Image (cartoon, rainbow, N blue to C red; front, side, top):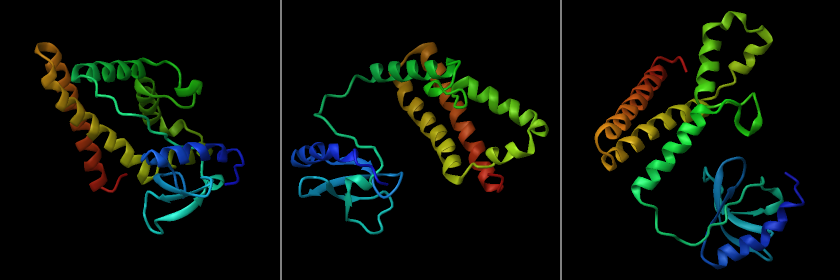
Length: 195
């Protein structure tokens, strides 16, 4: 990747490394690795990629995709109830979102995504043959992301239920049950070779 503008982050890389903070970044592709050092002015990094292999290695910033996370100082974590409240607020916002993410109607999430997905499954025969390839692009990574998200949601909600009382606790526990059931069904489909 030839990106002459990416080197503007060299000073940030140097500053972070000198402060003892690694820089999560895309290293060797579109998976996040870690920049843990630099050479010269910081335009060349010392990094480890997601998959290991040739690590550690020198990688020129100009050859990296444009994604860097510059870590800041440490703050005390918010209270459990604040974390749960904000998490549920975001989940409800996403579920109720009418349009697509990033104002793109082809990317939807929440209820809109479920509705579109279920409608497509109910009416596969009406999908033009040329469009079917787009439905079949799903890779194992996509599928793993789908079931890992359900597993994580169930675990998170179950871990947070004790923060609540009464009906709220029961509702969060039911939601955890739902995600765990969905995860189990997805795992079962893997075993049947239908993924």
